[in-house]
Amino acid sequence: MEKLEKYRDYVRQMIDKYARYKPSYGEMKVEKIVDTKTDRYLIVHVGWNQQRRIYGTVIHIDIEDEKIWIQWNGTESDLAEELVEMGVPKQDIGIGFHSPYMRQFTEYAMG
Image (tube, rainbow, N blue to C red; front, top):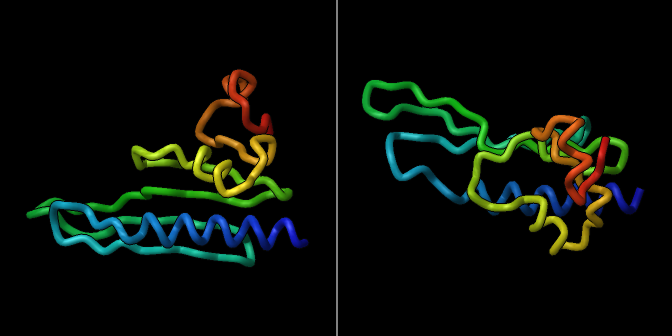
């Protein structure tokens, strides 16, 4: 349980950090979604750029079976490496947007 709480804290820190970045265009809200019951963590941009509706997930991270799964990374940053720098072992980080076949070629969790 201690490990899970530590991972939740790391992911919340990451979500808080990236939620501070506002898009440089349009009238946009940056929404943080932090659900510690189901361990789902997201940043979503919602708003308008002139006459165009903007809605998109920037970051989506789940914690499942005491592993951190990066489901989507719409930033230019290496979120997995940031987690490693925080102290998370690579085998506890999954790159969910890589196909199961491609995961074998990374240093991170297979599934």
